[in-house]
Amino acid sequence: MTLLLEDISNDQENIRIPYINEINYDQLPKFGYTPDCVLKSESLAEDFESISVPCGCENMCIDKCPCSSYAYNDGKLSDSYDNYSSKPIIECSDMCSCTNKCNSRVVQHGIKFPLQVFLTERKGFGVQSAELIPKFSFVCEYAGEIIDEPEAQRRLQSQTPHQSNYIYVLKEHSSDDKYIQTIIDPTYIGNVGRFLNHSCSPNLFSVPVRAGSMIPRICFFAKNNILPFQELTYNYGGHCTFKSNASSLVNSLARKCLCCSSDCCGYLPFVKDNWLK
Image (tube, rainbow, N blue to C red; front, side, top):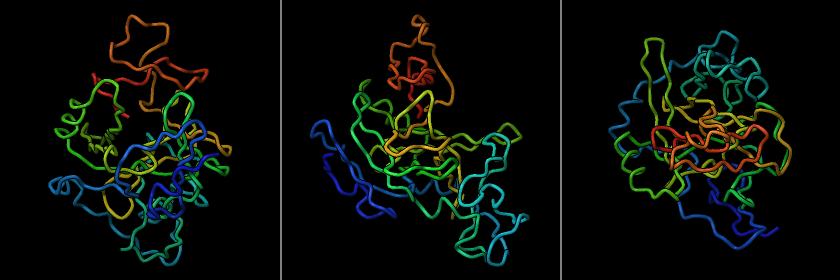
């Protein structure tokens, strides 16, 4: 094992996140580390200026708490939580009267598992944990610059076909056919989440969580028990865009998927000529 960097976060996370390379001496790309998302423009603050109503619970929150105590169980995501039908997760904040150890405070406490960035055999950089990650545990979030759609389009158009796209587009739909769109790009400023690779059979899934503000955090939770040093992955598109045997229907810019799972679609998710992670 070759340790090339002791901590990619520069002591900004709860634990150090090393970069390990057992293949060659390739270094990580240069980027600024941030444990939380940052607004690229002050004008974007208007989209998230509302605040959640704080709870008045004493010590630990109760089941009827207006915050999201229902979503967590023993520090992990509840097994009854459904990403499509459950209410949005809004954690307790400093404005709430409950204790800092309240059941509704998980993501805001940050990374707990000893994550490592490493160089994979075929997919570039990846992420793994040196310890077992129990099912439904919070692993990390996808932090970066929050940008608007014109800036996202500008960045995408300036990329070459061989450059990696890290832009994550979150659309939260409401009952009146409207949606809130949040665009996160960790290319220049980001966290360990930028190194998570795609898999058609992922062991992580993403959940939007609000903690301390109404800006949604893209939070990754363990889909099942994850063994030590197993690569951590999520599905970039959520569904299979192409079938590996339908090459005639594949866009010329589509990239081959290298996850090698039994359910592999053959190509990475592809949306309207732009890669959306």
